[in-house]
Length: 242
Image 1: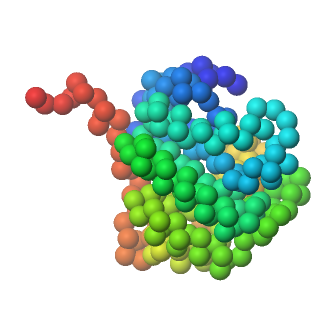
Image 2: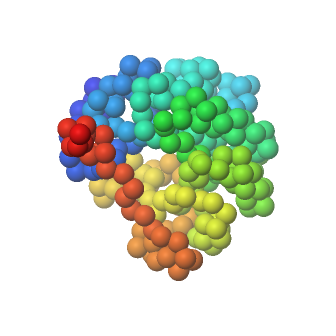
């Protein structure tokens, strides 16, 4: 897969969606500029672990083995003009306190230097997956909640993202602590949304509720379930009145 393939796909679907985000291999700044021109406005890129030595163990070969190149990826996305950038550490690899500390520092740096870009932080905990990989440093629910609270205090304006990796009960009770975005109705198998075989999941889903069920729960807690908070027309200067 190359950049032009992704750009072509983005151009094809952009009339149907108000916002398009990618979660793919790291690119150079020019590559992200190409994505922006094609209609992409969001990027999610996890460092996975901020422990340089552990990172080298997890990625000994190939382009992904370049720790610094991956670490600087969100900056290249910000320099390219992406509207949204999401970061995070894959919880369960390194020591969770160290990962939380460096995730927070990374977020602060991006928020201060690319303030035109909306920052979000995700908290993916390693779940059972094909291949049987087990977390090297499991993160308990207690530690997980402590991490989220710390990041909310440190980054009050950042979006905090919680995936369907977590249980319905835990997700329900984390909403009041500052979670701003939750996935629902997720499928982690390649081609899964097209109805293909789900036997090769990237990770197991714990909260299997539908988007409608999660939306109902959010409203029951006194919050508003926002399905759309952006439109590409906001960037169309031809629509602006003088």
